[in-house]
Image (tube, rainbow, N blue to C red; front, side):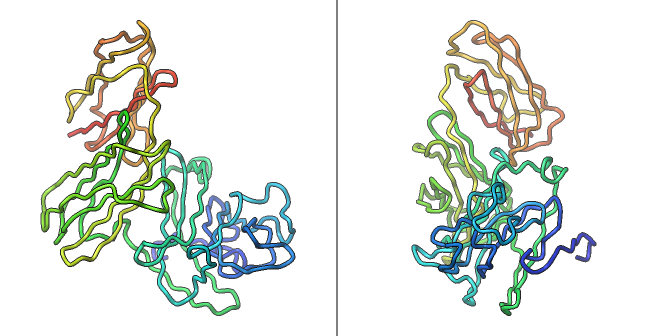
Amino acid sequence: DPAGLSAIGAPGGSVGAGGISNSLIIEIDTYLNTEDRDDGIPGVLCAGGPDPDHMDIWLNGNVNPAGVSCPASPGARIIANAEKLLNGAVDYNIENGNDHILRVDYVAATQTITASIWNQALTINYATVSYSPVDPMVLFGTTAPYFGFTGSTGGLNNLQTACLAPAFVLPIDLLTFSGYNDGNVNIIEWLTASELENNHFVLEKSIDGKSFEVLGTRAGAGTSQSLLRYEMIDKDPFTPYTYYRLKQVDNDGQYGYSNIITVKMMEQTGFSVSGIYPNPAKDQFSFSIYGAKTDRFAMEVTIIDVSGRTVQRHLFEELTPYQEATVETEDLERGIYFVNFRSGAVKQVKKLVLY
């Protein structure tokens, strides 16, 4: 690493990352070693059986901590089991000479990291693994951990090459792609700073983050250097989570996908927020409550940025219906936020724009 940020881990079965503390390893294994037979892969037996390519997750440079014991000793695994690479119902051989995409997503709201392997067109998902909770302060001792990549070929002479792609491999400058729940609907929006021969967007939704269906389309601006905002309402979201991704299509028919975001369906409330105003706001905003089932109640107001990070938290110990309350925002950076209103187990979310 020219910046001097490299770390040398143990080679071999440790996929080059062995012994690197404060690390989370996403393993893509093209060979079933003896110790891999206790990974809980469906259909793979300790005594033998198929040798599928598979994905797994490990912590702190400790790959296959159970050693060669089979079945595994208690507590050896990080996730329940490794996942076979499959093309439909058939084992998939990833070292077939084709290019593949490894996508890693982190949802701060649920502290979940998810890794998936796709074909180059992002139309076939071969495997997905997830781990939660991934709290950066607990695992890494910082809220800004480094990310690294390594590769190993063992003695099988599998040539592996890799390149890093931007988060959005699209001919647009996508500033934000986010969503939030508002009552019985989810609202999805995205902002572009520039577009180049952009024909249209397709917003897709999924119940599991793997199989997607089309929610709707929005016409693109063609070529633009202006800040543009797009919005789409999902009137029938899944419960409790709905996954979304954005497909961008050029004038010549070529297309690419954004990252995947998750929106949670919130519990319906015994109160309603009349709205936050002004919105967009500058140094402060106000809100009032109606429809509450009690004369006086406490309410927590939390402001969350688009990455899922809590930036402000306020406690109003005694509110009454239709009472106006004010929140100061002068210390926050300009941008888009989500304001969570919670009283007991009841919660509502509103979007806030600061300018």
